[in-house]
Length: 183
Image (tube, helix red, strand yellow):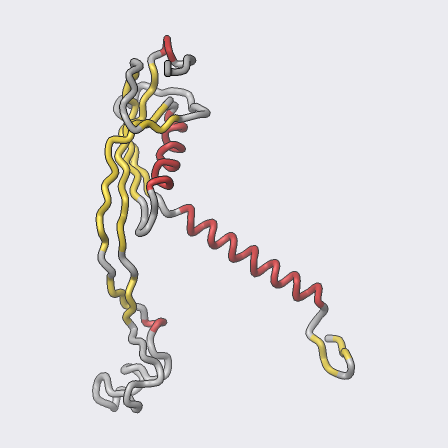
């Protein structure tokens, strides 16, 4: 600990900048990890004996192509509350690349409303005047009219639309795999 003008100082400006950078880095890592778990994808391979090498590019098609192709797998990607279709398509594309597909064809996108839910969370509630710390008082009695903390141990988790993508991974016929489709 150093002294500046007779007063104790905790550290230099460099130390403060370092802690701010560390705090920012931790926040970014947590945000990145939270974003990774937003889509759940399930794959059903139609012919497990048939395996292909992973591909570099996978096209996203809204309608089945006219070119000859074979279906490799069924893909079902489910997002989280408030998520968009783009996240679903990107995750389905990554899974199709690993399967060796040339394209994925969208079959349907389903949107289901999830209502808000009340969840028990004891750390969210009143830390001083909980019903368990005052067992001699009637259940639910507070020494104040409304209590200093208006929150109970229950909190609401927001609801919203959850989207589900159903798609098919396809592989073009071997004779036309390297050619581009005609306009």
